[in-house]
Image 1 (cartoon, helix red, strand yellow):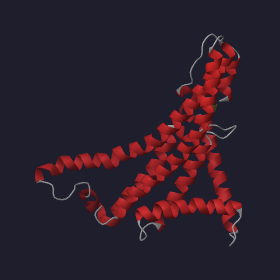
Image 2 (cartoon, rainbow, N blue to C red):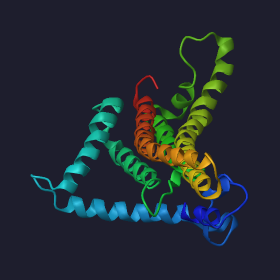
Image 3 (cartoon, rainbow, N blue to C red):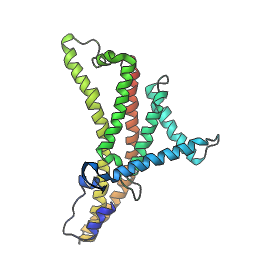
Image 4 (tube, one colour):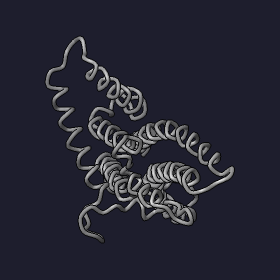
Amino acid sequence: MISLAIPLAAGGDSFEAPGTADFWQPLVGDGAFALTRSMVVFAVVAVALSVVLIRMTRKLRVVPSKGQFLLEGVYGLVRNGLARDIIGAEHFKPFLPLTFSLFIVILTNNLLGVFPIVQFPTLSRLGYAVVLTAIVFITYHAVGIRKHGFGGWLKSFVPPGLPGWLIGPMWVLEFITFVITRPLTLALRVFGNMFAGHLMLLVFTFGGQYLLLHTSGALPVAGVLSFIFAVGLYFFEILIEFLQAYIFVLLTCVYIAGAVADEH
């Protein structure tokens, strides 16, 4: 965001709205093998979360510290409010490492979109959402194949009781739904919300700056209103970032619950 403010502060005849190119931000190199800002942020988050979780779980106390209390609250939300309730008390425990890791990784990366200095949600780059979704659906289909066998997994795409002439077309439609459509919607949902929310923050922040510094008459008043709206949007974005992490893990649990169910 600071890099976008520099050309605006330098002056200009017109305001150039932020766009998709502003989310690229290569640090070293260019093209497919560039080291980008989002890569650095995601790597730092992964290392930081690992260090924090290892240190906090080494010395657990009966009377928890503030950090342990917060960690236990997040773990309890994922364990009891999502995994156990949705997947079921008999099957949820093997999937706790996956669901808990997904939640804290997505939530932390999302919240960095409003964290000072960083202010960049890594999941506003589609590739990160795609990789996390691939992990979910590889797990989902692997669990289904392990429980029901490969033949049973293939048969599960056809609802029981269909007329014979509908089995072929329905199998194709259901296969597309479970193998293509659902992964795409899971990835695009979190990516779209992070991308759109951050883009709106950029537009209202730097649009307001431009109206204040480079216009006259009544337009600077609109710039003040733009800044006020950006502040409100800032706090609304925090809520959206939490909800997107919650919804991603909730849907993950729903899919896994379908894989371990007897009628998969």
